[in-house]
Image 1 (tube, each protein chain N blue to C red):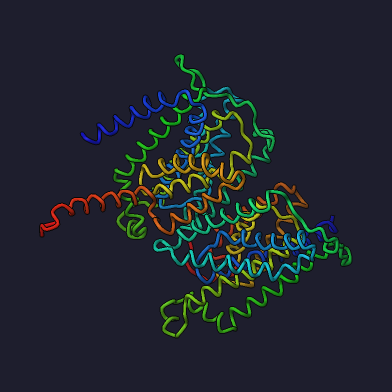
Image 2 (image 1 turned 120 degrees about the vertical axis):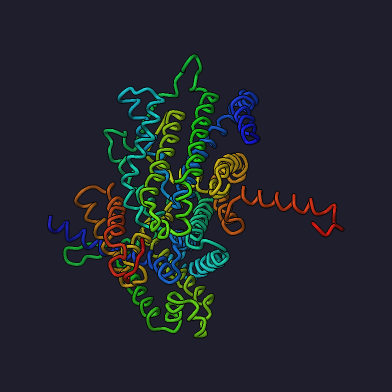
Length: 290
Length: 328
């Protein structure tokens, strides 16, 4: 029993790491622009399909799809930003509805192009087991976790230390003052969407290497990413990692101790609990949200 | 007086002329009934959105709960069907009590919290196998009955039932909007804090709107269960029951009464007849495009846009003849 629990803690940790990478782009845009991009999961999924395209059509390693995925995701991200910036009134709710619509478009575009079939990687190298004492995992899971940690660290550094990161935080805290300091708010916001696209493309390729993809996955990726963002608290990048690992472990424990059917229920209940009890999330700055 | 004659003409058209014209065409009738089902949910969605000021991504939850409760009480307890449909509505209201804590949340947070509820209800419906039949679903749900020698189980009967449900709901909606409460709710959009200060219990009002919206959605869901005689969790709680009404209400203009209804009939019919034949799988892509276009170019929806255009055309029309007249 102890071994089983240790193993599920370990698997939860690894899948939590992958959730963090999926959530990172959404958390960035939400934290800096107060826009919930409901098409984020679809962007990740689109990148995953680029990896599938690379593997099935060119019989190359899906990892080589990263440049292609980068181009596609960033183009989509910039297009979303361009559309969002044209909203004239009630920006908060209309941006939500607009990105919901973009999500519908992307999901159905994927459905039209690649049909509703389930796909997963055919390279056996990704599924090779890695044994760490009593703990088992797939090679690709460890890779996903590693990439995720590196990108969380990179994003944290970029946001807190680099010029653009600082500019972005300045625009988000006071747009007019930032303008007076010589920052072009539009340009910094485009940059934040592009960075979200970059994160989504890495997440998508890694997703394809570790698990199965299908067109309807996008919306559940979005809701998972949003749950993690709420759990973390707005604007906290390390919080995303911690929140994602919490979700991952809670799900793995539910599967081990109860049933796999309740896996999704766990994250939903956790989400509602955090919204009601800790509306600022685990690491969010104080401030009224509800 | 003029308004009263308009209503009489509308009623005659809906209850006599339209059924008489379309009675023979089963296909058109079935599309009409399905579009009116969407219209009912769209109206309930718009009630919450317009009066309550809350955009919901989770109306599928109330739709599913209503349909399951009505199906179960007729199948297991033998409750008469029209009573069961009402019970479905009350069941959805009871389910919405669980959503009450979410009222503390504003705007986007409420919208997404209620999405989480829809997921939870769906999982519960799948897992409570003994009551709901689990993922296999419920087969052979009794159809709408024959009353006073008229078979409501036919397409025509179903049409008459759903149009009555919608008209009653629209009447209730209009009465609330015109009442003191409607005034208070409208004031709440401007500033919730200010409304509280003058003594309006805004949380109570929002909760009442949530209950009413859930009730309406539940009744429509219950009607649908007896109309198609089959339920499974993936169908009853399908995201489409949120998405189509949302697109329809926003397309028509969710701040108006007729907008969601006309929007639903137009969007559903065009989706089924045009988009589906153009793009057999993935035709919902057009709904996404439609939603984007409306939000970007006419965020108030189509009906207000048309009204505005008509007014402008009329004004310019009036102006044109006496162009030399300075008083114009």
